[in-house]
Length: 246
Picture 1: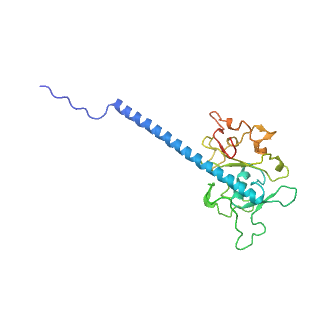
Picture 2 (picture 1 turned 90 degrees about the horizontal axis):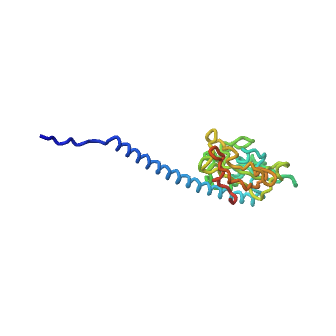
């Protein structure tokens, strides 16, 4: 008498491998779509930041006669001085006719007044993220101290970078452009050595000469600026977001 064949239970190895492969493929597709959507969202946010900064700088110039300038022109001071001026901590004043303006505390000579004179901010609170929004209203920036809240950051958490005139007799006339330069390193960049640190200057600025000097000193943008894609090692500027026309 024949016995009926036992019904097979479970999956074969090949069937399991096929299922795992399908799940892996779907996961990769889903992750790619999520990453693309996240990148698009970050770019949209950063473009909005650039527009907000540009409008704030225009308002600053209407009020004080020029765009935000830097006291010394060091890389760190450009970012710090930009934030200080746009949120109202510091202002530019012409103290000596024929000489560059100076960068002073907004309440210079009025520090002892009670209540304190109000700061004039050119950005709404939280309109553009900083490296530490919780310390935006702190009073730790006086006497040359490095404030906890000191620079604007993009949607990827990297600092924006800014260049314009430097308020020294030697460097003030070097700036040839009628506008300032403001840059976001966007989605493609070489990671900083430590989280929160500035990316390398090559991610923001083209070292090629233009107009007899570099864009960092003159504000003249080389025609090669967006041609840099960095190969496999960077820097990457091809997808940078900027305040000038590409």
